[in-house]
Image (cartoon, rainbow, N blue to C red; front, side, top):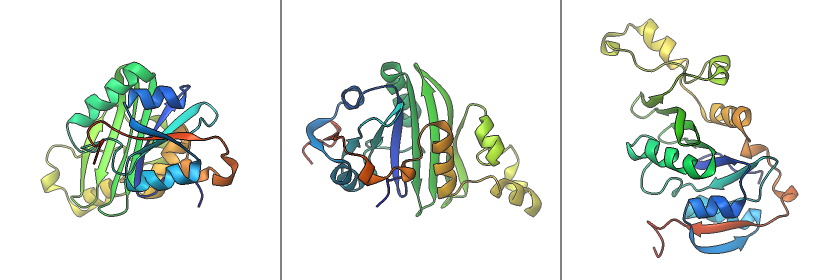
Length: 205
């Protein structure tokens, strides 16, 4: 197994320790785990905060990043913004092959700079906050929201819009540009342990 990133969600936090990230997420029932065990658990339940890679600490949880909602729902923007008040720069990434759910967002010091989420099952952009970044423009992904009157778009207009909707690999490309592409991390090379725990809303499940 190489890293993580597909069919899951994670945070990338700049220049913070695993303890600081775990504290900001208020993780309970903490355990010290190695990369392989922590990653495996986080795919099923809870959150694994990794040992820092150069400049970044990652917090991975398929179900519980964030806990109780996802990037399509109203609490998401406030949740990420509040985290950034404590942690500085916080980035969020998510992708699920089914139902084709892809998202990325970036907040800094209590300000949400950019957030995008596409849900293919509903053929909609459910989150489009802030201006597209230079990386999105270069990759030609996530740069178009649905404009007023989209219900009457021609086939050509739909094709132009669909061409800018992301795939799983596009989420990894954005992560690599903004911070770290976790699929490129060699599991064997990570020898420092991280922190596994549960957010308060699910502690004791």
